[in-house]
Image (cartoon, rainbow, N blue to C red; front, top):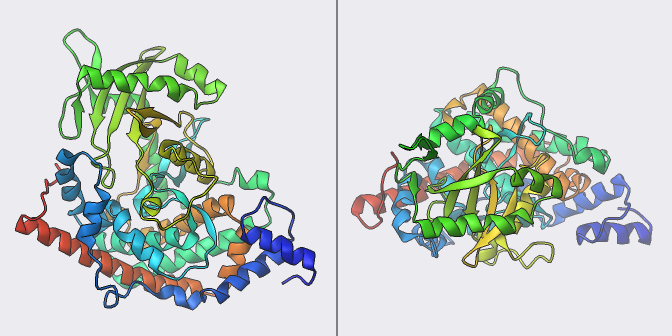
Amino acid sequence: MADSAAAAAAIAAVASEAPPRYVPRADREAYGRTLRDRVRRVDQDKWVDTDTHTNRDPLARVHASEAGRLSDRLAFRHGRMAVSPFAFLRGGAWVMAADLASLPTTGYRVQICGDAHVRNLGAYASPDGHIAFDVNDFDETCRAPWEWDMKRLAISLVLAGREAGNPDRASRDAVQEMIRSWRDTLHDLSDLPVTELARYAVHRFELDGAIARVLHKAERMSPLAARDALTSRATDGKVLFAHTPPKLQRIPDEEAAKVLAALVPYRDTLGPNRQQVVDSYLAYDVAFKLAGTGSVGCHNYAVLCVGNGVDVPLILQIKEALPSCYQALGLVGEDPHVSRHDGKRVAEGQHRMQTWVDPFLGWTTIDGAPYYVRQLSDHKAAIDPADLRRSALTEYARVCGETFAKAHARTGDAAVLCGYAGEAEKLDRAFGALAVSGADQVTRDWEAMTSAIASGALPAIAPA
């Protein structure tokens, strides 16, 4: 720790997330090392002890997460979560949130994704048209301990590894590689000027590896291809959304009118240059779309727009933004920097964490409920867990570590995190052990759900 009182006060300002001021990197790293007094790196290996958490009920947590959702869609949510333990994790941010909060942390907060798992990273088109790879789901985003992202992500690697047929030893090694990559990237980012950190992009992937395959898949998913996959041609020749329930279905005209009207206040959340672009499109058709796994039961609309000709489409997604599970469960305090409008919270969290952000990202309100708006499909693609075999799992883990290090450095202090993590492999090994224990717990939770479905206690409709 720095000897002078001024340096000590400066480091305290870093710790309290006060407005930034110049503090030498050495002092910030020294502060990070003091966080080991709160939780040793080797003690990050502990998952919840279910013997002492006797009131832990995963199904009760699932039901609690569904308050306020569309009840006629919940059977589809249960069916999607029941596909596998990894699918259960995808839909179970609420289930895991209290577990994460019960574990010791350094207390050092960054902007977290909140629902970190291997499918919530992926490819998409940047504003200048190139294909980027980054974190791409922010429904649960908030400011919280960095460990919550990395532990959930580590557990997802083991579950995805099992789904691809990897032994746990290989998955544990991949988790250790992920944390090593996270540490190494933080070390590299600690000296970057803020302006360079703001444009830092993930680049450490093999040209013929798993990430490259995701990028190639994204290149093929153009707006026109997305439109053709979601629409059909009416008898008058007009292109409209297809009616293919439960995945996509037409809605009453009154409901569609409310969705289209919500685009007016949405426009005001965009910059003037993007307002010009939106003004050049005509929004003319709306459908309800069943979204993801954890989001099933929320209102989620697709809006079809036409621009300079019928073959220049823009498809917008207008998705209901529920409170982050960490906020709803009272696991994080009020943050003056976080909007009370959850659509704005999601959009702002995305801006903070991503290097390149969807140019049409904004927010709006429908019937008093918050929504966020983004492109539904513009060169978007994600990894298939079945592709994560052996070396592919390790490569993907390494890129996950770099990606989250970049996001956490943008919204925290890379030097503080680097100081805590250090150069030894203690943190790597601890997260490897935790990931296997956590994956076992998710599997037991999944078994509880599938048993409830089998007995008829929990309605479920298997995904088509």
